[in-house]
Length: 314
Ligand SMILES: C[S@@+](CC[C@H](N)C(=O)[O-])C[C@H]1O[C@@H](n2cnc3c(N)ncnc32)[C@H](O)[C@@H]1O
Image (cartoon, rainbow, N blue to C red; front, side, top):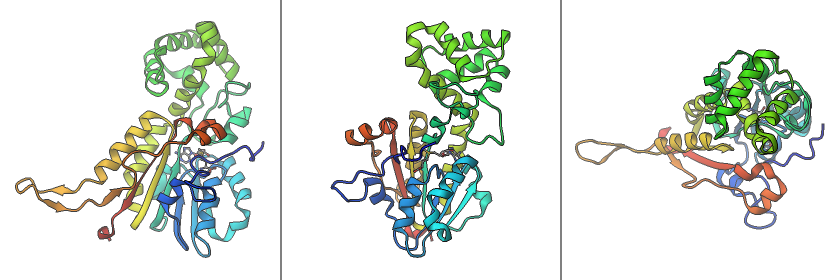
């Protein structure tokens, strides 16, 4: 498994050569900051944070995937005394009792290591068990989900998470197939899609796999929990930034950040009663440049939004 192919999203591009990326400029890591990276992955962003927060900054890195924690540990070997890596879903962030942070960061979804490893079932291009869990120590696999779920729930899941117009047909086909045989592998799922959609199947497979992944990992549920807790774990002046890859996720982040940046208004006088506890750092989301997309096609649908905790919330 190669870690070299991994290019962290929004990491490489500033206005000018050698400048920090716009995302890093907005998050503004500085000497001795405390950073919580909720989605460590292969530690590309984490390494950048650690470099910027020398000499005494500390990074707490979470990942739901124990294998990625191990890879990140190797990639961060130069920074061991300044980082703490934790195998945990970020939905459990408040239970970890981490110190107040200058920066909290999340880069949602799957990592290149997931796609590269057929044993994880994330790729429709290679045969492997139909698993798709980030954390293999908990929950049910995509194969188990398909076997246990009725047709209308499958339909809802493909429409909502896969944004598929063909949700009814794929749900019907999978439900019918699962009554006769257990769909155990990625190839079993691809075969049902081929039989149902013929030459159109390859174009639909990314959304079909994406929907199953979002379902088995309860990705929106975890994001809701993160958005409800992380802002209050920031120090005054602390920054919270999220990269999303799905319109449902971006909408949730946009709505939450907008609410957090609203002052409390006196109903009678119309005057501001309490200033907003947060300010928006991004009125519009940051989206990748053409150069970044050509280097890293996964960046295509990325949106970055960030807020800052105002000083008066001390
Ligand atoms: C896009 S990758 C992060 C890449 C990382 N920023 C880098 O530079 O290498 C997302 C990572 O988040 C993890 N992940 C996804 N959902 C999670 C959750 N709810 N809690 C913790 N980790 C999660 C995945 O296992 C994956 O390793």
